[in-house]
Amino acid sequence: MHQFSIVTPTFNRAKYLPRIHECLCKQNDIDFEWIIINDGSSDNTKEVVESFGKKIKIKYIFQENSGQLSARNTGTQNADSFILAKLDDDDLLCKGVLEKVWGYFNNKTERFESNCVCLSGLCQYETGEIVGERFPYDHFVSDHIRYRQNRPVHGDKYEFYVTSIFKKYPFPVIQGEKNMPPHIVHDRIARGHKTLYVNHIFATKNFFTGGLSTQKYTKGSELYHNEASMPPFNLRLRIHHSSRYIYFAKINNEKNIYEKAKNKKVFILGLCRYYMILIKDILIKFYFFKFFFEFATNKNSKFAKKTTSG
Image (tube, rainbow, N blue to C red; front, side, top):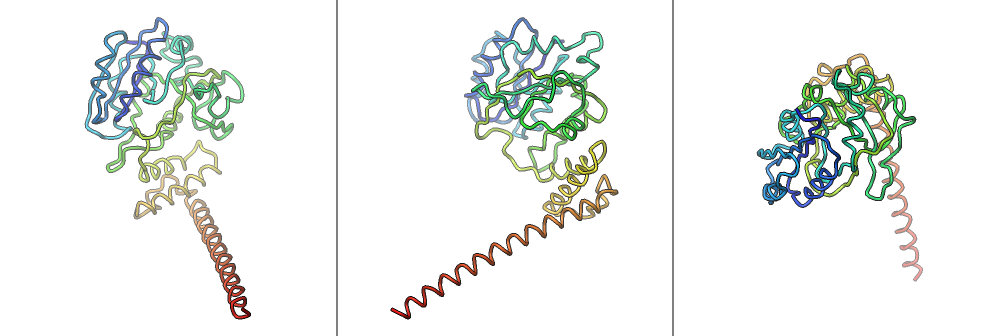
């Protein structure tokens, strides 16, 4: 069993893979495997991977185009390691980061410090600037739900998970959609497990166009917000997520929305919030068009007077 599995789903972005290969070659004496999931690419991804040789352990898996969620699930289920991390094809791991992360891992318990199943750190841009914000303080234990609602910290973060735990929480795959809010899995894990948060920079983020994460996912959003309307989210967030669940359910033309709601106790409050936002949007549009109509009418009236007097 390897110490780490690095999972990279990719679709028609072979040109970015050599960057990842180079950054992985700069890791210290750590036993890891790089799992590349080719999600039905039509470019030269296979040839690029073959050109890397055997300097590091690579598992290359091709599958018919099924989307990011399916590719991530495929990579996770093929991982043979203690620790797993997803590395998008446009991101990079910092030099020597695997050795640093391994220092937080307990071989006997097969958990991170304080019996945590996840280690969360920071991301940076290529300029060296931190993405978003640092954690309020270093080296604290919480979970993905409570930390977000109690001390919201903006910006992408980078997580390493205990592989055996992450395998138990695959991304739900919905027919007709190839993506989903990634929080759904983190939230499911958070209901029974803890995360260790540290102010170390783990990865460099890039936001190149294209790739696997650009598709819309209204059904996935409906599922996510429905689940997030349940405790341990606080009441304010439960109402917010309930209203968002209603919004996406209506977009998806769902029937029996109330019966399918996971938290019927806050459904009415969520419905009130949904209609309040809807009425607010209608009023804004009404006053905008009213102002525009009056402005246009007044302008035409002045033009007509000038023409008559001329």
